[in-house]
Length: 148
Image 1 (tube, rainbow, N blue to C red):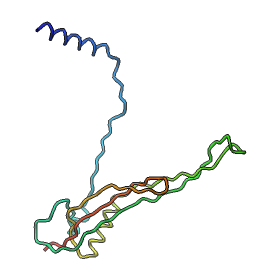
Image 2 (image 1 turned 45 degrees about the vertical axis):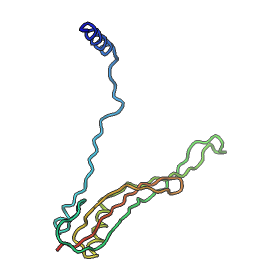
Image 3 (image 1 turned 45 degrees about the horizontal axis):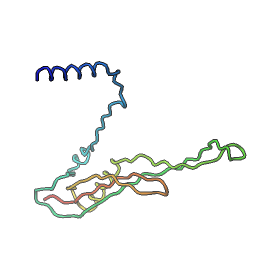
Image 4 (image 1 turned 135 degrees about the horizontal axis):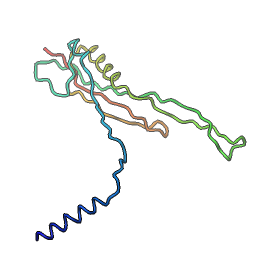
């Protein structure tokens, strides 16, 4: 039995030693996502993904959906079928989403309603078709309350 285990370990060592150099298929990527609520906290406003356990007055449910602008770009590309050897193509590119802008919007709406907190705060990616282009957006929702 010992010789069998030794033989298997030896075969494993030999095959790993004969393998070529390891190559990286892609570099390491670290994504950090978060939202800074400190400017709202300084104004006495609370954002929380949790329920609020203190006394409060219900104000309302709020959902803000942000869609980025979509830009149209026109380019000339080689085309053997065209008389001048080129054709014009239109391509559409969505701008980046600014989640901080959407958070500021839900804060303004809640504040105008008389709320001083949004509980059950949630940020959800969403998408829709714009012609043949799928545009990525963001939906922010929460329960606006006035703390007592």
